[in-house]
Image (cartoon, rainbow, N blue to C red):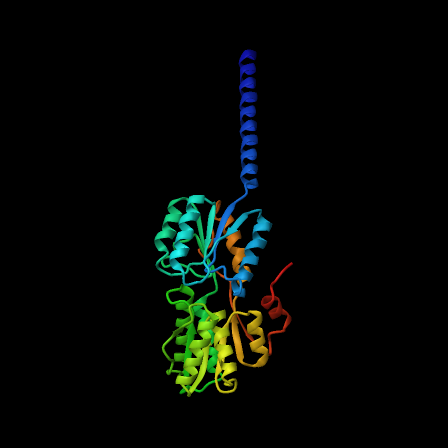
Length: 328
């Protein structure tokens, strides 16, 4: 009997040793996993540093990378129009085998095959600002662009009559953000009795092109009373055209985003107001979500929100923090 007890005691000690060893090995593996530096390739629509929206988003990306210990490299095209080059950049990114790719898609449909290739390669795909048809990515982080477009349409309607003629200066045709914002703006105008909305003008994300399109429009349509610019370059180009034509009191402009040049247009009264997004939050959450997606389920859609900014409320403390998110 004592021999049997001795054997049981020995087996118990052996079992405890094995369990302890396994637990120690698991903790070492978990710590090593936690200590791993996540590699992320960030692909915005453009790396044009003159567009402040993308510069602010890049700051959000950099802040999150530092906080979560990720290594993030940014690659992008010179303009938002170059869909083919963005696809080429993504092909190269796949070869580098990062842990995740964060993508602002230049086209709602054409990037779907390369997005599926990214996922097939076992790389986490997060879309930010501008997504893809069918919800290919693990998570889409952006403004609710349809609702933001509605806000622009509703606000402009307060300053024009139902029978007035209105124009929309959009940016890149085929971009998800462009499609949704315009749909929201048109729906809001129509619901509020404004039916005379001109065919859409596309600036291709260029201030210069938006300016010339608006100059031509103001010459061709002398009875035009309102314009909605659906992104930063479109708003700036339209605003500068209104200013140069001396139409400040004749044509009401409502825009998107909050660059320093747009702030100047607000202060001069050329820009009635703007729908401000939160690009810093988008960039930060994109990195955070890319890291979280490796080990847990993440939200498929994260709405970062939008705020209507007017001249009279732009310097309220809560709006100032959103308008000027630059950090040291």
